[in-house]
Image (spheres, rainbow, N blue to C red):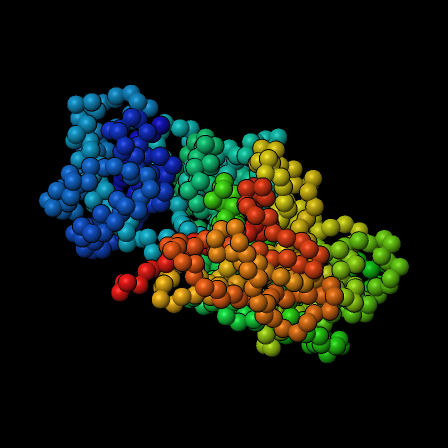
Length: 633
């Protein structure tokens, strides 16, 4: 392991602090409990550095925020902060670098001896104090910088092989090996590609830099991903090629994304994914578009409505149909459907508590209800030449969006043909949401709305429709959004063995009161609110609520729109229950469970339905609250 900790460069009025090898800086048996992990290059102006390093509070906040720092002798650090100024920290850093030299593992090297352990701790504390404020200053914008990080021109250490970009470019296949560069280091990820469900996408980066792809898939810029990547490091990129990379800054494909409502709880910025606060979700039967949950897989495309074209293909004997937005609106009758959309990962956070899963940590609000208006898909397919006899050959209708990744690959999905052409299927090519043009985040100018079906099949920014014998070949249809046994892990999973999720199971959740809320005993009663919904057009007929963890039950009052036609209950039911507070009880475990008209019911616990992707989470929802007694009593 190399121990080149830092180098300082002065350029104009800027002082830049570089901490190299983000995976692990300290790994050679330092004093017990002292571990430092830094995952980001730090750079800050000398003026800001001088101002911030005098703020002891920010430095101490760093110590709390750095997950790798478990104990660093906080009392000694505090005393050190009182006497250390920026020049002293610089000297300390230089001393620390010189002392560590090129130590490896737990061996002693150069001037480093066990007798120096106390000074080592002070030196580390000094380093933290000097850089703590810099880190604190950067915390608020770290997500924004993740997609545009530039490789810095640091001379590569000599303890690993040096490769040129030409060397890396030769490794672009499984046979020759798959090499990539990231922040100036070279990685052989051949073994990883074969295990990753998105390996075909990774191959597109083979022989080049990961930065452009991770600018698009910014979700990869996480600690566990970087730690996995570090295991495949084989060398460093030459200094000349590093300098060339420095001149190329990845453009941010998310820079034109729309402004979002600040009330949303953000799960990821790039791509943008967020849910409304649960407590307001059940306040309106129709969810306002601004707080309707947002689920994007790629950047929001900029679509000119005047140039928009919808292509319909795959019908034997018929010419492909091309429709403008105006033609879609004027040639076909306009239909309006009230339908609930739910992400497959709704309530994933509850599965994470049982055992970690991969995916966005959604709460209970990755679900919303809206009115959608547009042309029926069936009408458009008929105009394109569809005939009922085609159902003997084709089984699927594929959708392609206009949102694209770095390679030009579009988001895609498909639904069964019988759903697409059924009069009762109510599948829309929607251009309005809640009586207005679709917002950009929700598919402007046209999206598919497939009532009763998982949100992943409701393709936004629709560009192409293909009638086919096969399902969509999209990654999101073939290698994602599928359920598995709790016994299946990432070493044994076979995505081809499971069907793609279409209809979703029965679901309900409590939106009020919130987890951890405090109720006033003087109120004498509690009002519980929530939502319930079932996929496939199955109507919710009952919601049961318990105030004692499921020992006894009460039936909630259902609230909703008009009575739906059988098999076409596309919208959720909001529900409410007001009940007396149980006497002599200081804590309530409130539970809800729903029943649909096929008598499908929710499972009582999460563990039996746990799966590695955290989808289809629909166990009884539980909320614990406390009761505050009347102080006058």
